[in-house]
Length: 144
Ligand SMILES: [Zn+2]
Image (cartoon, rainbow, N blue to C red; front, side):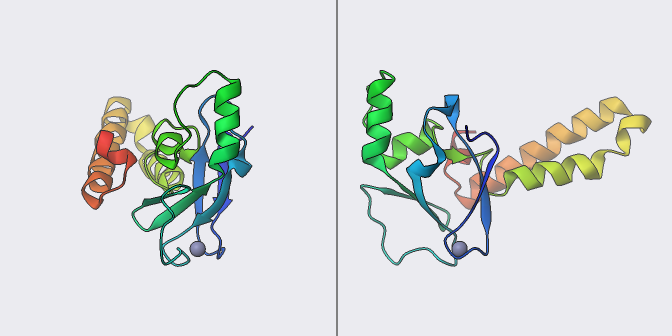
């Protein structure tokens, strides 16, 4: 299981929240996670995917065997694993879980004052956040 998995990068200075669609791939399929401070100088496209300075390195051969067993016909490329959500950011970017928590904490006082405004504010602030991520070039945000 790797629901709500938090993973530190290779240098340990940053972390990302990850999600695993259908819990199909075990977390160790993500062999390495690099933040913008510890990312390698060059990307090996066969096994790595870069997203706004972060780099995810997958064990694509093992991922392929999981896909084959489960009847998923797509080739286990880093792009497919990431875009299909099998081992990808939770939310749209590595820090989204914390952004979401802070947003809920900040708006919480509104719950008792004006629930409709609370829900509307949650929604509009999250949409604005997603738009900022999209403008910054985050891969998952491009689909929003
Ligand atoms: Zn790092």
